[in-house]
Structures are given as structure tokens and as C-alpha cells.
Length: 253
Ligand SMILES: [Zn+2]
Ligand SMILES: [Zn+2]
Image (tube, rainbow, N blue to C red):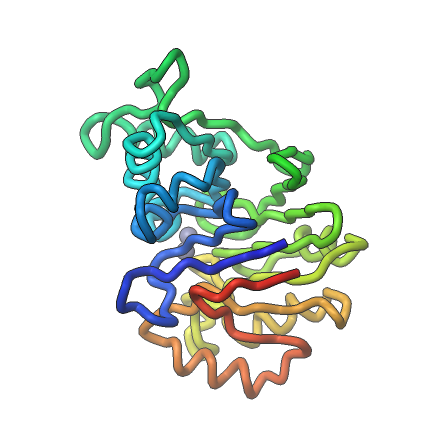
């Protein structure tokens, strides 16, 4: 499985202001910057988007992405998300005031954006990927994703405070190769991290201790203003097999 962390803007470098990952060039996780990267033609290679939750840094460019794919290919996109996230997007974004109602604008009888509800704890097939959503700890309905291509499985646990189930499920998975984990705040902001459903280096250390040793741990969603402090604390936390997520880099698992 190939995973790329998309860069947030042309000059953002390593900073993840907005959140988007792309798997095997075809399936995106979150659409914070998905619609801002590359050309409409390159974006149109992506046919499905999985959303973790409705916060702006994860959905901001979804309308732009869907418009680019439409303009370029005359086809729509499929967006998988928990039902509560779909309801928020249809009420608050695709409502004609913020953006046209792509969920009800039809193209050859199909919506421009087809929303597919994803049921937690149930396997969903997307191409050759098996996707399982596990609820996590965040102030709005949010899920992590365990994604398995039959050879490797990878966890995306973004925007979560301390949680249990995803780590238990991941630790049991026979093909687990890597886990991307939220480390949004430095340790002295632990109270704010817990109140807003995020992790700090020491909280992440406790979460990651549940995974088998060879699994790659990759810190992501480091808040831009605290990036250097978080990196410094992660290095000192001495977490086995941990690296800092690199934007624009193609991870192979
Ligand atoms: Zn969030
Ligand atoms: Zn976020």
C-alpha cells in the first residue's frame, strides 16, 4: 500500500495546516487540502474520499475537489463517511449558501457527490481495499480508519484524544504495518488537548504502547505553531519505531 500525506499549500512545506492522505493514488482520507493539490486532471485519479469527521481542516477543499473532478471528467465522486458527518455536510456546506447542493445535482442520473454512509465496525470494500471505521474520542462524531489491502494494513487515527478500541482492533490485526496518529499539541497543553480531543507526545506514547513493536508509528497533524516543540518532545519521548510524518513523501507498506 502506498500512502502520501498531501502538502497543505505550495509553500507550507512540512506543516500540515489541512489534512488529506491519499492511498494508492485512488482513495483519499479527508479533504482538507485534497482539492488544492495538483491539477484537476491529477485530482480526478481519486475516485473515493473517506472522511473522518466534519471539522474544517478535514473537509475544507471537498467542494473544490468535487468541482475539479466534475469539470475534468464529467463524473462525480463518492464520499464515504459516518451518517452524522454526511448530515453536517449536507446541511452546512452543500446547501447552496456555502456551495451548490452537489448531493442533489444530478449528472446523467447520478449525484455529483454520492454520499455513502459508513457503518462503524463493519468492513466496507472500496476497490481492493477493505475499510473499517472505528469511533474515536473527539468532540464531534469522528472515526479512525483501519485500511487493509490484503498484504498490509494501516491505521489512520487522526483527531483523537485518548481512546481504546482502535488500538485493540489494530493490535490484533495480522497485517498491521503502520499507524498514523494525531499528535496535535505539546505536553504542557495536555488539558487543552484532552478538552478538544487530541493527543500530546506523552499521551501518544501511552496509546502507541499497545501496538506490536515492528509496527511503524507515524506522528501526524502536528499543529503548525507548535511543530518544533512537538518534534522535540517526541524525540525525547523515545517512542519505539516512531517517525514524524513527511508531507509529499510516498510511504510504502
Ligand atoms: Zn477535529
Ligand atoms: Zn483536525
